[in-house]
Image (cartoon, rainbow, N blue to C red; front, side, top):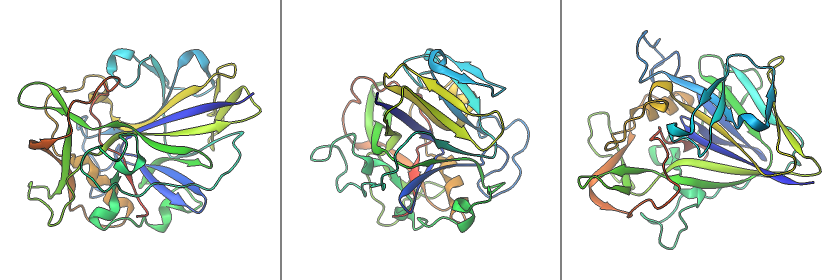
Length: 302
């Protein structure tokens, strides 16, 4: 029996190629600001909570602290059981390792020749010259303070699940262009201007099994999914809980939380993705894109 585990990834999640594998790293934006300073109490719109979210009817786990994220949140077309993550390494069991292949950046601003599910739409840290992570991010000991979770993906096909859209002046939704600007809004010289991914997905093939386990290095923290051999979905997110459960639906703003990615490269924040709300856009987002606006993920490694 074989099936696919589709892992949806959104929010402050970095995609880092490591040898034949891909490491998904979730920066610690719960306790620290982008400069590494302690985040003051009450900053709930800046405090990101890393979560592993799964359909409750197929999940079994001894983890504590779980809560339900309703379908009405816009994260998924179903209710999800959310497990907070805290300084832990995760992996997927019963997966045959296959060397990873991540598509490089796209060469156009909107999906015309390039399909809208091409992985190359993901924000690329090479664009801001911060593509190399610190050795601690991928080293054996868990890098406390820097990360709150990291997941090793040993096999899977990577793609864009949802392109970032915004409500514009006519109150309708459009896939918009994004460019890099500094914290004051001044554009980065030579910045690309194009659509970017709000959510990426990796389809992980599971063979000769009817279930799959998301393993944690923490005791009694594994999450087992059993869909009776049917395809399964899971979500790895790193967003402010306040916005997840009560998100704004108006025009997008500059993604200031993107600055947390610079800590993983050992560099001070400079440029962040900024929406172009007045210039050209890529048209309506189409069906199946009712995602709550989140911080976009990014890839390292070029």
